[in-house]
Length: 357
Image (cartoon, rainbow, N blue to C red; front, side, top):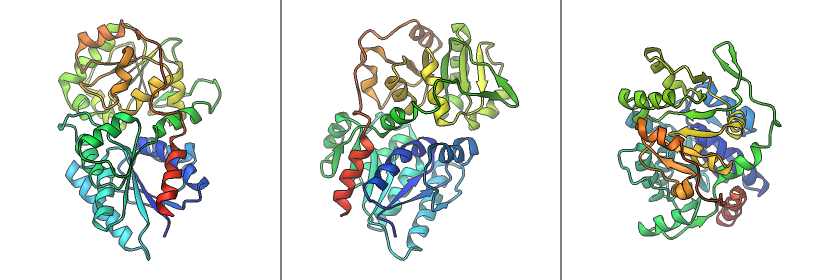
């Protein structure tokens, strides 16, 4: 059995694993990946393994979609069964972020007395209506090693009574942006919508939308798209597979350019070329900040509160007026580094080496 088993299942986790797995290998830590299959569409899964050079997983559990309870239970059951089938249990099990794969993997390990390592610990939106908030809180409280992206996470864990095994390593997504934003040169990404090749406008905003609170609410979705239309700006939207089916019944603004989901490096190229970002993603808020792009977050709260300083990130929810007002604002302070120095994976590998050996 390897030193550590890593659970991945969703696009952001693949990106994080790309840099951490390499750092573990360089530190002499043996690792094996379990892919839960939470993201199973090829455009959201396989392409990331191929593009980012992630080690092939030992197994794909092919869990697929479903309700939160059904999906979490299925992953928990399958991860536990796989672990019990091994000749020897690992020294630790590592999880990333706040997905159902994160919580299920952590629960499976904790119940088998395998130390849980949580990367991106201590984040809080303080909105218990978000399934991700439940996942991250529960995972933190059963983890033995907790890697935080900033001192904000360290302080939050301390306020909940968690002080042992807590480390501020910086954010591994910063590592990924630092490394992969230099890949592929300055050529624009190839964009397609179906079989049609799309020409990238000279000036545009990058737009992503995937949270059920926005995409499953006709009122919120309509309000956001109205703001896009009224803005008059060219807006490029890589459409998430689960959102695609909802577009058939909607008249989209003429200035909205829908394209297929983008591999990570292509998305970074779009981000580097755009004027600003509209998103309900957690990760893209940080990526926008690191590439010095103003971000408008289509949520009522954010885990990444530091990005709000100086107006680099604005919380607007799904309100048409607030979105349009935010588009007319610019950051009012100088950019400053956040979430480490882009070498978080090396810090994680060093700490884990001491812990495992």
